[in-house]
Image 1 (tube, rainbow, N blue to C red):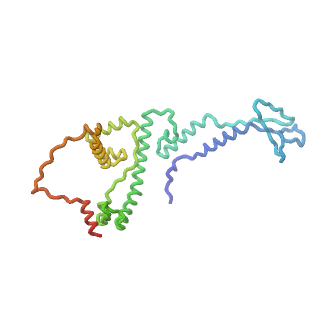
Image 2: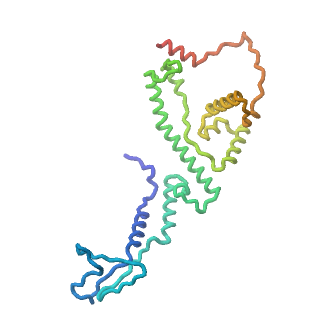
Image 3: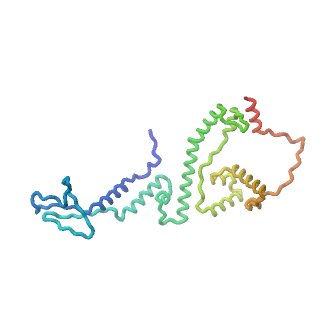
Length: 279
């Protein structure tokens, strides 16, 4: 049994197509010539005839033709386009936007009558929808595909360390730890929204990792890039004001007690040794 289609709640656009065709038909047809009972028997239709005997009618601006006896003219009054077409189309697109759970102004490219508050509210609601759909796709598709890929890659020695040794398949649980970051968008009011979130981090209401995730970035990668920028600036003798005032003061390292300190195993080196031993 098939489920509901993704755009099933949206109404069809049959009326719009019919209205466009009706408007085109009304623009192309001005009226009709009718033959009354006063015409003589065998009277041909109005207009010249081509070689095939088809009647040809011409029209020129500012020219009034005289109808022959036995003919009458009936004007064709088309009702399209009319004043109700625009409001109807707008209402239809609003229903489409509701069915698709997107903002109307973005779907219809209609910014008439919107203000900052309304467009911000609609945009944020739409972005929450996309983020929810991203998480749904991650849960039902990406995580499952990655789990199968990881097992097959480790068993086939397709993933290797920098020294060329394959990762040990016995540590599949360790290598399974990962995270997915969906696309994120710039805020509608970047300065105010960013200051609000920075204040939240400063007040301890949210972690810097959460702020990076909201921006679609990995916190660890961001810190690594900042460290690289600082080292490069120091090497070239350039001062980066954004980081210079926030650099923590260097404190002397505490003296280690040789009796209490124990060497810590470097997991990456251990993985390399195990991988080399397995070969």
